[in-house]
Image (cartoon, rainbow, N blue to C red; front, top):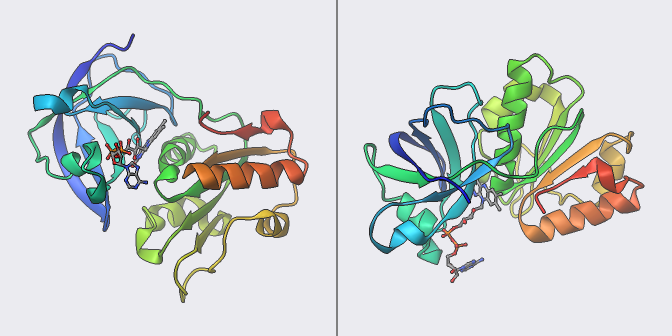
Length: 223
Ligand SMILES: Cc1cc2nc3c(=O)[nH]c(=O)nc-3n(C[C@H](O)[C@H](O)[C@H](O)COP(=O)(O)OP(=O)(O)OC[C@H]3O[C@@H](n4cnc5c(N)ncnc54)[C@H](O)[C@@H]3O)c2cc1C
C-alpha cells in the first residue's frame, strides 16, 4: 500500500502546446530509480481519489521533483485539471514504482509522452558520464509535439533520431517506427531495447523487434 505524500507545485512551464513541466517540493528521504513513476492526485474535492501515474523526470539526487505531463483537455480527466493548477497548489503522490529502469546500453524507442522515463534515465546516465553506447529513436505526430528536442540533441547528438508521422517536416523524416526502419538503423539486435509510448506503438515495435531476433529479456517495457 502506497504512502501518500503531499508536495507543493513550485514551477510550471509549457514545453509543447500540450505538455507541461511541473516542478514540486520533494518529501524528505524520498528515493526512486530513474524511469520510475508514482500515482499523482489533486487533493481537492472528488479529484483526490483520481490517481494517475506520472514518471519522475528529475534526477534522484535533485532537491525537487519534476514531472513532464501531457495534457488531454478533451478527456475531462486529471491532466485537464492539472493544467488549471497554479504555483503554490498541492499534489499528492505515492511511492515510486515501475518496470522501466536502466539495464545496460541500448536503444530507447519512444512515442510522444512515452519519452518521460527515458528523459530521467538519459539525464541520469549523462550526469554519471555513462551515456555512451545509448541511442534514442523518438516519434511524434508533428515537430511541435517533440518534448525537449534541444536537450535531447545536446545529450545524444547524432545518436538521437527524431521522426514525425502526421506532417511533412523540413527537419525530420516522416516515417513510422517499423521493422524496416529498425533494420535500417540498427546493426546489433543483442543490446537492450527500451520501448515506451501509446499501447499500439509499444505492441507494434516490440513485435518488430522480436521478428528481428531480439530476445524477450532484452526488451524493456512497462507491463
Ligand atoms: C507507468 C506510467 C507512467 C506514466 N508517466 C507519464 C508521464 O510522465 N507523463 C505523461 O504525460 N503521461 C504519463 N503516463 C500516462 C498518464 O498516466 C495518462 O496520460 C493519464 O493517466 C491521463 O489521465 P487523465 O485523467 O487526464 O485521462 P484518462 O484517465 O486517460 O481519461 C479520462 C477520461 O477520458 C476518457 N478517455 C480516455 N481515453 C480517451 C481517449 N483516447 N480519447 C478520448 N477520451 C478518452 C475516458 O472517459 C476517461 O475516463 C504514464 C502512464 C503510466 C502507466
